[in-house]
Figure 1 (cartoon, rainbow, N blue to C red):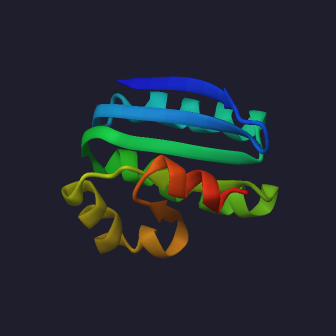
Figure 2: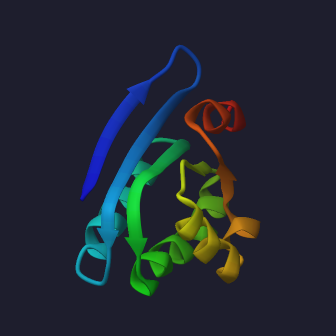
Figure 3: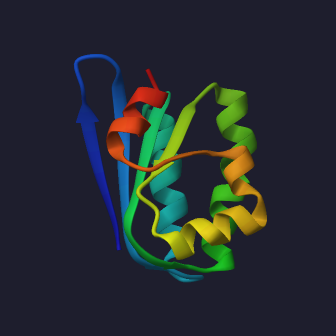
Length: 113
């Protein structure tokens, strides 16, 4: 399940994606679509993974594939709310060194100011 929400805060304007359930090979297409839409819409993106229970290598590959685009486009991108087991997978792959990860929404918003 991928739920996409647009949020406008006083300053800054940011785009929020909320991702929950399981991201596997079949649903990773929706994740990629959601991330690409977010990147086309805003230079400040936060991604809520609080309801994400499982992410496959295909889902992780989607995050890995956008890292260079984020940098090239000057997009601030922050993930927050990861469960420990999901966070562990990001750490094993070293994605925590390439993507800003925060514990909660307040920290994520602070990171994109």
